[in-house]
Image (tube, rainbow, N blue to C red; front, side, top):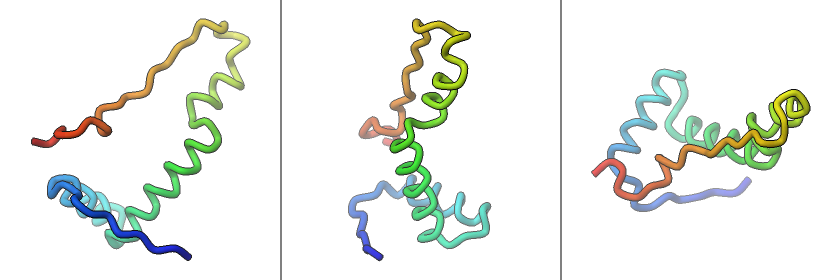
Length: 79
């Protein structure tokens, strides 16, 4: 298995991840691993919205447009 180092992670993100790990009864490393795996799976299969569109798109029409929330990808969010 591969290893990874994440540098320059904002303290608030680290604190939130630690709290999330605690609430899920996992180590911080296990929590981050779970988040990364779930994210990779969701992006490779198109995510939940894509699956809904595939299943129910014929009932909703082709004009259904859903934009992803980009809030977490904005730099300086926790400044």
